[in-house]
Length: 106
Image (tube, rainbow, N blue to C red; front, side, top):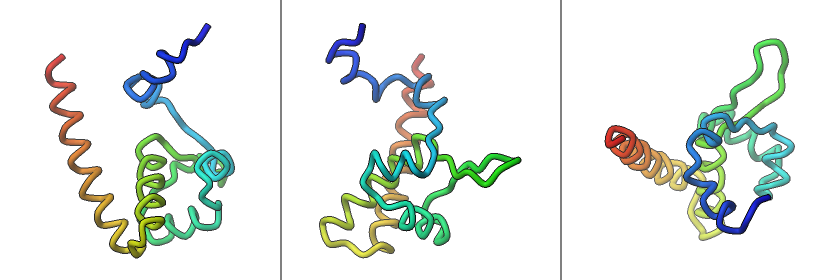
C-alpha cells in the first residue's frame, strides 16, 4: 500500500524514472500541454520522442517530460519559446552533470 511519503520520494526512484515511457496522449493529458504543441516542439528539436521502430507512436521519457514541464512553466511566465528552450537546455545540462556526480558517489 502506498503512503504519501512514497509518492513524495518518487522523483528519486531512479530505476522507475529510467524505465518511464509515456505516450504523447498521456503526456498531453498529464501536463496540460496539447499534443499539437508537443509535436511542434519536437519538430523544432527542443524535445525528442523515442518512437517505436515498428510504429509511429511517440513516446517520451522522464527527461523529455521534465523539459516539457520546464518550458511550459517558462512560457507561462512570459518567456519566448526560443528563450525557454535555451534556458531549459542549460538547466538540463546542469542537472545531468549533478546526477552523474551523485551516481559516482555510490
